[in-house]
Length: 323
Length: 250
Image (cartoon, rainbow over all chains, first blue to last red; front, side, top):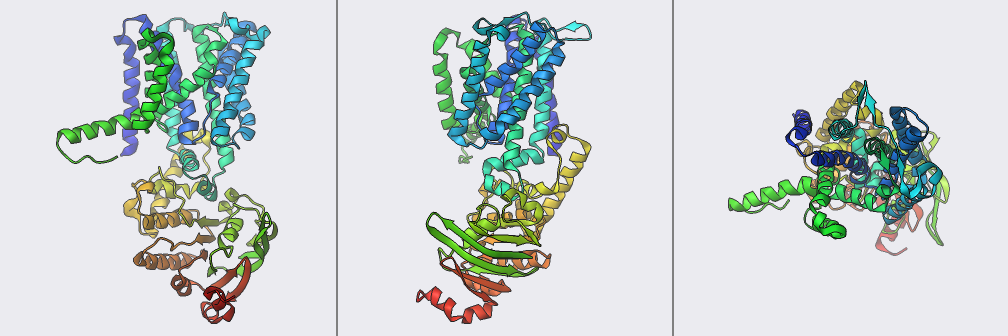
């Protein structure tokens, strides 16, 4: 039964993620794995919009930043409970994206890309200019850690489990969503919007709803980021990061929940491995994106298995099936 | 059942349709025919909410639907198929049909994410009913195939299965026989009759005269944006104005 296989696949991933830090003894690597968790959540949020509904957003870093700043300001400046701040950030950003989404998502293709790009840049400018609230370019510090029943999430290991609990929950919920009538409606909009409408799918509303969901999830990731780092600055939420998120989704695999994890992991580890290249890492991203779209348009998640089966076929001297 | 009332459509200075009126009776198969450029597809796009007409109205079961957008019509029982087939290419055949039940299911985003029990029950119903519609259209052996990989003819039948899953009262088909071979066309004729026998009213735009004369109860002829004639297949075949239009002597 396909449903059971889905559950086994998910549980296997949960086990790997639970055990992974026990095998790693370098604190620095655990820190990298914390970031993989946050990036996975962000890539996942974008993938629902880009991979499933087929709508681009180049403003995701803005929503991520809004989550971080709302949570940061409410706790560090106003002394509000971090969990309440996280909820407030998520609700506000979801609502904001819902309102902004109606006019923006009327646009298609390049125009939608430009509009979301603009939105991201406006948010970024606010982080820099509203110095009274955000601390401006020098950032906002003194953000408290999250805590549950007396446990303060103040070490990399604790944060690892905290963030992956959220990320895994988000992945589980997203998997449920994409295998439901809503998930089908999203893919239908992507494949043929006119046919989806004729079948009664309110494409306009659904796109806005998914945009809002995607923004809200990014805001939760932002809030987690703020409480983990305890310091945030605008530089983390700029246009480059939005592009990096798009790259994660495309490299991992459009319309694939596990692909989001793969893409996030690769693009988080890559800069660590490319330290030697310094500022030239952007060239490597570019090359990666070109190579991927040319040779593995389905992303790693679909490309690797089909490449493997092709190699296996070649080794056994069978004619190569063209996937 | 369906009434087209004085529909006029202008695109810039060009009048594509002028004062078109006719009625479609419940349970009948009505054919809309006419030479290329007669305005048949434009009329379909107006009725199905994709275009908004310059003047006139479309009445479905006593209600004026002419200002409703396309997505509001499925729940009122009006569906259509497309001349060039609009399938959801990346989805499986079964999933395509399951989308036909979108308006007859209502789990929201949160219920779907949380896998609520009523949503799970709804999914089971959607799946089993969709399988029945595949069976109805004779393509249940293709359920797990990706729609984009289907041969054209099978795609046509899938589109009809998906439309039937909406549980329509009326189905509009835009050139359903286009691109089909002879065997597929006769299968299609049989399927359309079967659809009528379930109580669904059918309106089709078609070029294949043999098919139209064979299955239609009534025929409306358009020419150059105007209604030229209306009647039974026999009346239409004997109508001198229609013959003239088709032979280009008008």
